[in-house]
Length: 108
Picture 1 (cartoon, rainbow, N blue to C red):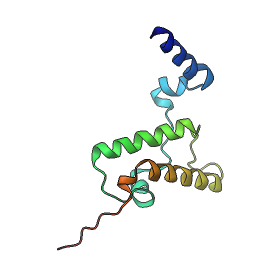
Picture 2 (picture 1 turned 60 degrees about the vertical axis):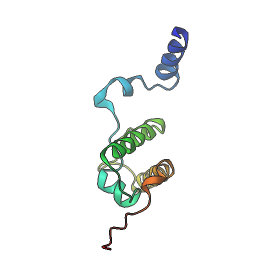
Picture 3 (picture 1 turned 135 degrees about the horizontal axis):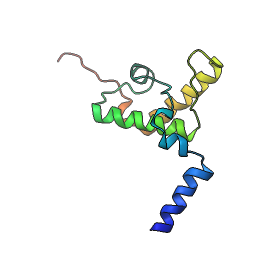
Picture 4 (picture 1 turned 90 degrees about the vertical axis):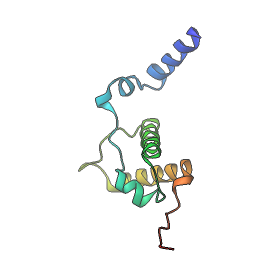
C-alpha cells in the first residue's frame, strides 16, 4: 500500500504536475460556468443541493484534467472560450443525463 501511495504521489506531482493546484486552495480554476449558466445551457432538470455540488466538483475536475486554469474574464479569445465552454457543456450533459430534462411544472 505504501508503494502504491508513493507511486500515486509521483504521478500527481511529477507527471501530471498538479501539485500546486491540488495543494493551494487559492489556485483552483475559476469556474467557466456559473450556476445560472449551468442551468440555462447544460442541465435544465431539477438539481438539488447535493447534486449541484457533484456537478460543480465534476466541472472543477474537468477543468483541471483539461488544464483550463486560466481566467477568461476580460482577456483572451472569445472563440477559444466558446469552444472550451461547449466542450464542458458536452461533458456535463454526458456525465449527468439525469439532470438534462427540463421539469414540467404545469398545473394539473
